[in-house]
Length: 225
Image (cartoon, rainbow, N blue to C red; front, side, top):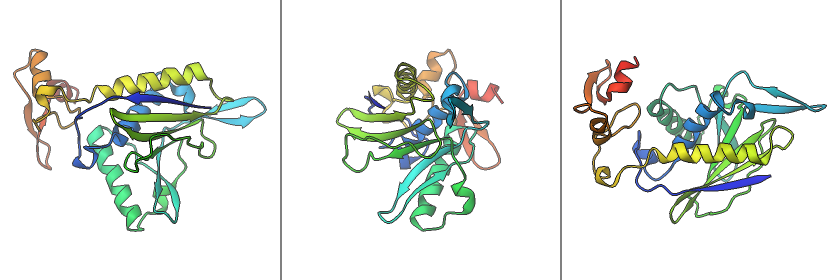
């Protein structure tokens, strides 16, 4: 079965300018976190005879199409949204240049297809291989729509709808407040804005040098190291 949900998000925080008009990185990132936490039962596969097996790892796959070849590329494990965003861009560019490697095509445990730049507003995605579900993203006038097709032998509609609702709730956290929509200053790792940091009682963002470049970081991410 396929369920859909609307995500009315305006200007969003972006770890990479590539995603200023997309939520693909957010969907991949937050889905991975949900599968690692309260929805681990969806990171699974029906193996027959009424039995369901859970995957040991969470490996995201994104569907890529150059009109001649539909490919599901796997994404490496990322420690934060910024790292994941860079990995997605790298895979997409190498796919466009026909430079994907064998390591980019390993088996995945869930798949996302992003059609938000095509003008399509309704999708019925087909489950990929032995997975329990697949997500498809389309663009709408008020933001985006996410459609999920799931395997009834692994889960059921109520459970999957809970997953979609929680996914929407998390994605909406990345919407920029109106007053911050023209500011580019935010935490490099979690994208928290300066005003949000100050609302927590902190004076502002910290500037760090991690050996690669100077970055702004919030107190929470700094103390979490």
